[in-house]
Image (cartoon, rainbow, N blue to C red; front, top):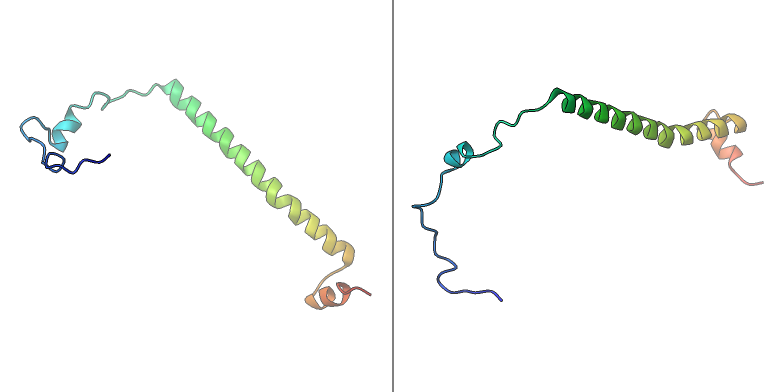
Length: 90
């Protein structure tokens, strides 16, 4: 249950609080060293992800494009009029 007493809305005591700039200076991991090996491993991992993304994009868009191109070639469709005439059932 929620409490709506006056303590809930009382502002905190400012004697023991830090300002934002002081809190940033007290941060422990402010200057974290990065090893070159980990940086190289991250670059290799990102390049593998990029290659996988490019391959998946080529498969997703390339397959239907080739299929559509082959169908148009087999039906000898060159203009929209060809689509209208050859697309009708006889």
